Length: 160
Length: 445
Image 1 (cartoon, rainbow over the protein chains, first blue to last red):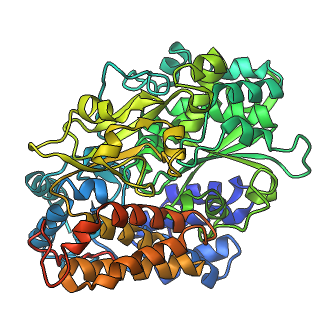
Image 2 (cartoon, each protein chain N blue to C red; image 1 turned 180 degrees about the horizontal axis):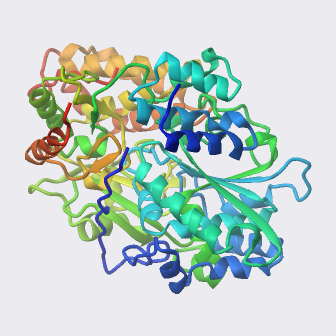
């Protein structure tokens, strides 16, 4: 498996810095996913070898964590929080707006692979609700109008 | 992948007492600025103190765990054995996931060194040489801020083999999670840091005896540990005096969320009247509506009616006397146009999604409650459902491995008991009085 030199360097550090090697597993999976887009069979096999686990053990961990995925997602994963603080400030309407605008349902990907959409649980931005996260970027106090601009912004810098 | 950083908005109110938030917006991410603003003085002071004196100072401060459980911090530290064959650890819980809670975010964003300094002091107090700062996976930008802060502290010699040239060693590692509410439970947090599924451990042994990597471990919330440096610097007595009494000392970050005119994170002294918090600090309820319900401290707490909220004070005792909990500081104002059946459903949807599935009362209980509430809200409920849901919730509470079962049961019990009429109003083919489309599907599967 070929990663970027930066990720390779990060992996080297991660596998040696903890008292137990296995502690590196979750960060390694997340960083690999950031680069590759998802946890492909190749990535799973590679990470398992690096920290002396079976592929099954690695998959067992992947299935527990909501950020980890074994299928490709859009280049920009639009995550709309609808938990209570966001819900009472219009998050469900915002999520419905995103669905219409992107023509997607929960966990679907646009045909060109630019966007995917998810309704997510609390992302810890409750005082600035409704909140949306696109990949790791937070967008606070989002309205449908603001959402359109946000999506436009990402759409623009996404040459396929 | 580049992370976009836009500073999180800050608010202020004259009644605030700024202990933890005093450096917010002051550029304290920069280590030199942090030092200018009294930074790392407490760690230097602790280096010359006897470990027992550090613990006693924290005990005197009355500081209690700000993650939600409210356990006395000094007491927790004192449980760590003096002698131990396996290494001891400090583990900071930054898996901030309790709905309505968004305070640790601000500490990590605006004052990351206060967390590092707190960890060093905890390490000196219990004789640990390694600390871990675990941040939830969604908080990538905070992880980047924290990583830089840790690197800067190493560069200054505040971390490493010979901290502050005082002949002691202390190291800090930052760590990212990957999305899981359950990992905020302390034993699940250790499992996750060890690279496993975040399942809670059987207790005893408690983490203080056998925790991370089998060693004695102190686990503290981000806000709790960030409160330690000012306590060491100014004394426990100084801190405790901000609150009404010794068991309710100090201040806490209060996250006003939901239907407030002025939502935001405010640092209020313990014992602050909730009525004033709602109408003065939070600016009251928008759109000319009235308050119907208040979530006092994260969605795991018993909800308060308007009357209860207006006579309450924000301290551990007011809630404890009622057999309830103050929780995590995440307050949600719910206005009179919100359906409480829907509220119960959304809360249960969350716990059903986050239940790790390890023990049956929680795994099955949350699932059946969610299904029943969804059917009920859609107009397919029958009279006996109401008591059935209470029965299920009561049987889940106190019968699970960790507190997630309780967390799902408590708000449900309080909503059904206090707003039973709203449940009755959904019966006999009547549609939801609040929502035209009561049948909105929830995507989260």
